Length: 296
Image (cartoon, rainbow, N blue to C red; front, side, top):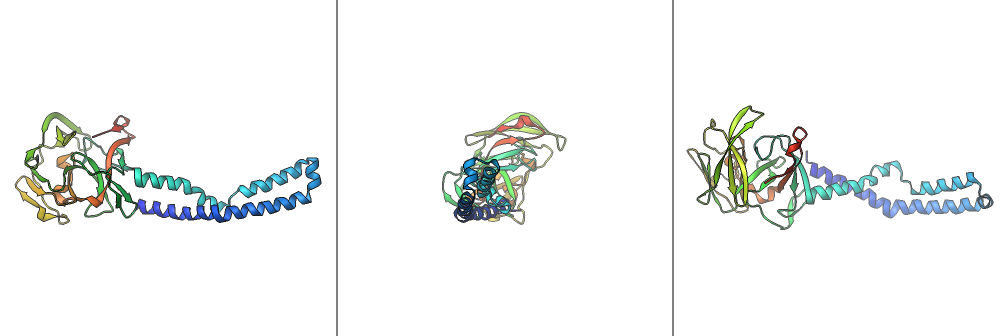
C-alpha cells in the first residue's frame, strides 16, 4: 500500500473542500444569516427591546447556525488542517518506520520504531520522489532508508559503506574501501534473542561513524548475485566474497548484522533517486523502552 500516495490524495481532496468552504460556502452562509437576522430583528424589534429571553435565544440560534458547517463538510474540509500538517511533516521533515527484521542488529532491533530525516539528502516532491533542492549527500557510515531497487514499493534500511566511485572489497568477512581495511576492533559477543544464538560483536569505523557489527562464526564467508542484481557487471564474485566498483549516483550498503542481511552483496547498489532519508533515532520500542534514543 502506497501510504504517501494515499496521504497526497487525501490532502488534495480535503484541501479542495476547505477552499470551497472558505471562498464560497462560508461567505454564502454568512450572507444568508445576515439576511435572516435583519428579517428577524425587524419582526421582533419590540420583543428585543424588552429583552425577552426566548426571542434573544432564537436570535442567538441564528448566529450559531451561521458558524456551523454541514456534517459532510466537517468530515472533509474540517480534517484538512490536520491532514495537511501530517503531509508536510511526513513528506519534507520526518517519517516514522518500523524495523521488521534483525539485519541491522545490534544498532537496530526488530520492533524498533525509528525516525528518518527526510531533508538531509535534499527535498523531494512527494509521491514522485524527484529532488527539488540539493541539501547534502550520504556519507560512509550513515544509516539510510531507501526504496528497495528490485521492488521500490518496499522500504529497506542499511548502512552506507561505499560512495559513487569507491572500490569495495568484502572477502572473508573483512571490509576494505579503496584498498584500505576498515578499522575493526573486537567487542565481545552479542546474544540474539530471536535465534537464541551468540554472535561475535565488533566495533567498526566508517568515515566519522563508529558503530557495532555482528558476525556468525558458523556462517561461511561468501556472496552471490541474485537474478535481480542491479549492476552485476560492476562486481566480481570471488571465493569468500566480492569486489565491486560503485557506479555513478549509486551507493553500496550493508546490514550491521553481516551474516544475516540481504544487501548490496546480493542485489546490487542503491540509486540516489531511491533514497528516502537518514535514520537517526529510535522513538519507540514497546517491549524495550530503554532502546529509545539517538544512534549512529
